[in-house]
Length: 295
Length: 235
Ligand SMILES: Nc1ncnc2c1ncn2[C@@H]1O[C@H](COP(=O)(O)OP(=O)(O)OP(=O)(O)O)[C@@H](O)[C@H]1O
Ligand SMILES: [Mg+2]
Image 1 (cartoon, rainbow over the protein chains, first blue to last red):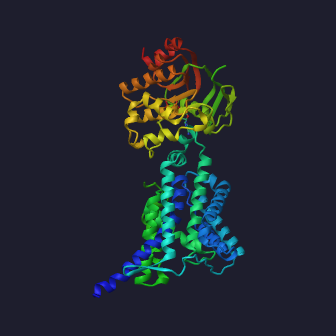
Image 2 (cartoon, rainbow over the protein chains, first blue to last red):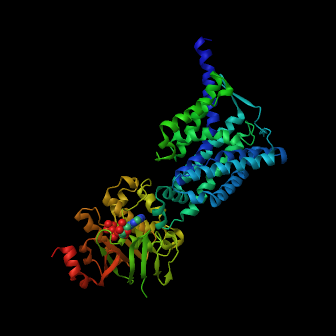
């Protein structure tokens, strides 16, 4: 083996693993991006719904004794309902522009969700291995955890489904019309509040799916959602706010950065470059985050 | 009974009363014009009918139904379509999607294709540009799209806010010609204009000045009025 190969192979391995992990980051970012793109809501509680999605997997696996992957539909539905409630009670009044009050409301909601999780599930880390746990696949010189391959596939399929839903269905067109011009949407007869509610519910349902597949290879605790938020925010910002495909690619970008950092530097510091990127974005591209929508 | 009845409508923005005690009625089959200079309150009246701004006082009845407190989508669903000032088309949706998203299956028995065909027959240009994004259309094409969008639910009443604004005389003529066709097909029209040339199309209307009705009457009496002569025709 040449020396180039010996140094490059591990890096390539990290990049490929990063793509797999990043697919799931992409999925959790899509929901965030959807809520922002359609309603201008920056949902800081989004990560906490991902955390609840993770606990749905834990409950399925430890309490009910079923594979967490089989709990995916239930996780989607439960988080969508939770999201719809959040919209009705809190976010409905903030549609249209991101305000400080909206951000504070979302952060407060997130903290409440975290505390509730702590009361119910305790502070210890929990995991929910799926039937693929512990299996590895060798592809040429690279190896992959099968649970991560499955997670990536689920994330990819969900992303494509959301994109098709938005592009092709009458509901998706209505969501895009409301995002585009809410007043015009109303005067052609679209019930903007109802449409926003369903879009928000979808965004939260996606968080549930992301959480449940993530917990098959990554343990959770009540603070997990909060620690995932920087990744989701960076992914949506890089991917172009409001763009589903962009957020997915942004998630993959984050995954790759994270895994290569872990490989070349230190896995305890794998998120540091992402936090740094987040600071750079807030400092130099604040409009990318809260201002104009880039298509 | 009139299709639309507005009585003693007043609308205020904070302390500024933009519309004061305005009353008028639009009969079925009419082309009713609201004529007035900049700031007269024309847009405000249409927005109040659509439920986009709250009325301070007064009543609005459509087909005998009280529209008080209705959300804009409910007004639209009651058969009152609004082509707003500045067109307000969905810029990020294609022409085809602008139209199809505006079709509400529960509002009519006709299928969406029938509505699309009707719109494309009026404005063949839109059919050619079906896949183009709304925001990239020319001003005239956007106006056609805004009108087409409003027709997707076969409204009883079509309200238009200065549809000729910013169009070349040729294009403005085309728009008015199409309005005549739309009316002939059985849609009542409420037309807001600054320009008195639209009186040719009108059956009756009112002239607004500073938020109040300055004159009301049939087409001829409006056209021959001192008010229109002085303000619009420069005689
Ligand atoms: N959102 C608003 N806030 C405060 N004042 C407003 C608002 N909209 C309209 N006005 C005021 O109300 C008055 C009537 O405005 P309106 O837009 O109804 O006039 P218009 O007849 O449509 O004029 P134009 O022909 O220029 O469109 C104006 O004095 C305007 O400044
Ligand atoms: Mg106006």
